[in-house]
Amino acid sequence: MKSAALTGLKKIEIRDCLIPDLHANQVLIRIKSVGICGSDLHLYRHGRIGSNKLNYPHVLGHECAGIIEKVGIDTKNWRPGQRVAVEPAIPCETCEFCLRGLRHICPDVLFMGTSRIPGGLQEYIAMPARNALTLPDRLSFDEGVMVEILAICLHALHLISIRKKMVVGILGCGPVGLLLLQAVQYQGLEKIFCTDRLDFRLAIAKKIGARQILSDASDSPVSQILDFTGKQGADLIFECCGSQLAIDLAQRTLKPGGTLVIIGIPETDQITLDPHLIRRKELKIINVRRSNNTTAEAIAWIAQKKIQCGSLISHHFPLSTTAQAFQILDTYADNAVKIIIHP
Image (cartoon, rainbow, N blue to C red; front, side, top):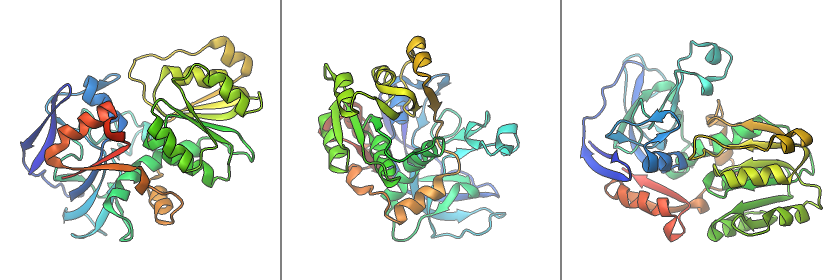
């Protein structure tokens, strides 16, 4: 089969490799659509995220959907030809955290496209049968890609309490931020502001319902946000871009008792918080680690049209031009939002 392998910093090659062996409890999936995620960009640019360092060559990609090609001898309830979305995390299922239902923070979790197992930028993958979830016929494979992103958003929402008339900020209008905007609106909240440094992404946020859009590259985002909130500050801010500037902005514009939810992955190894500001305001800070048992819920949300994904998908590429796709997203050229690769 063919794969798109990262062979060095910002270097992707199309390679021939063997179709993976199928274990008894696994399914072999013919990949139809794969999304390029912000975390893929981190690995593409730096070869690592924190202590997770890649060995080259390595296949990226964890947002994917496809068709079951073959099933292992101990696999039940699946048959060739079924359409699936893929849950990319493989927890150990035996540690303290797995037994407590916190599989997403399992210390031994395997995750597609990270250092320990290859990702979906290839024609076939073998995954445990439990990691395949039925993709309804009315959903496209591209919508199946968006399932993993929405699952993160829903997990983030499960970690907080929503109150009526909350003022909400979403910092970063990439795919996570734009899906989260829709999910927050579905909770009945309307007073939502969004920030980003890219005007075309802010335009999308405005189109799908953001009450206020602000460039975080402007000289006065703090005063603009405080004006928007009647000088009170926001109740809840989601940081979706991994930016120190965004974290600083959140600390300064949350009201006392407000909540900062950090979803974005910083490219630096450290971020800073103002201890006096967060102490005086008694801000709550919540970190989001991928998703936890929300993949099936995300499929249901998309199937029930609670979320519209299609307008966020800006580009399609065949596997053979994966290098070009990464170059475009790396520079945010051609108004790129969500890029889908089709092996």
